[in-house]
Image (cartoon, rainbow, N blue to C red; front, top):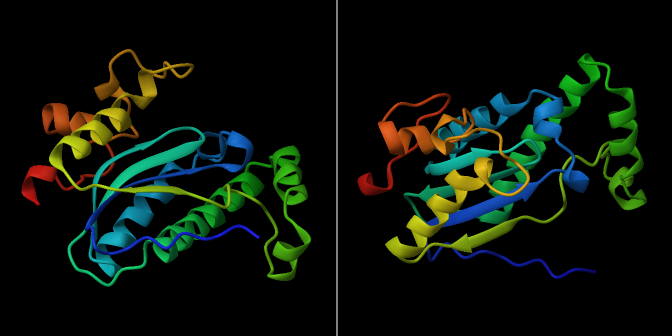
Length: 187
């Protein structure tokens, strides 16, 4: 059995990432980007958490989360977020009649997960979280997040600030496209 790492609330800011099962482009196929924005609002309203930077790629998410109060459990927050978003992805795939994709996600569920009631494997079980302990590290992570749509195989846009599912335009121009993050200078 894998050892679960418990993230400490000693640090108030984290760079977090999670990925769709087998890197499938589920956000894109299900047109479920809005479910991430809804989760961001839930974080703000219930967890004393603000999103500082984000990018929602077709098959994964990167974000910087800032917690204004101690006592949070990052593992639980991310697990609940993944579950919240997964419901929307599955619902949208069903409405769009993506039967083959739904079958892939259903076949990936382990017997143990089935016993717990899980019907589809939408995300990888794990997630990545790195505590942010300096402004230099924060800047590095924000730059990484914002350049994601124009790097490697992606080339989703020519200018990273044009990607609509990112906080890059907010940091470059002050204009938001879908969700307004908390500027790190306001922390």
